[in-house]
Amino acid sequence: MKARTALLVLIVALLGYLAFFNFPTLAQSTQMSLGFTEVEAPLGLVILALTALMAAIFLAYVIAMQATWLLEARAHNKELHAQRELAEKAEISRFTELRNMLEERQQQLENRLLERMDTLESHLKARAEESDNVHAAYIGQLEEQLRHKPAPGQS
Image (tube, rainbow, N blue to C red):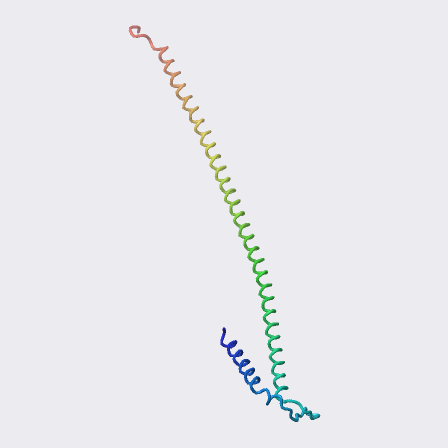
């Protein structure tokens, strides 16, 4: 128990103890002035009843405050939960967007690589054809030289 609660319980217990053992004195009738008139009533019981009424009102006020606080806390908790879900959805959306961007970037790089490989392949084919043509020309020249060259022993 908290110290305040323990102190309040102790005061109420002490008040009940004193009222129980001094009830005949509290119940004695006496003249009381209400300001505009005088009545005869047990002053102790009137004060005890007013104290009990004040305690009941205080207790009702505390219960109302606690209920209000609990309702506000519950509403705040619901709002916090909704915000958390919204943030999680946004984070998932960002991850999805990031994944899509990475896939798009990877596709672009693959396309560039394929284009570059196609370009290199076409250059390689052109060089191979050029090399074939050069070799064919050399072979043609050699054949031409061999045809026109006199045989050994013929001059």
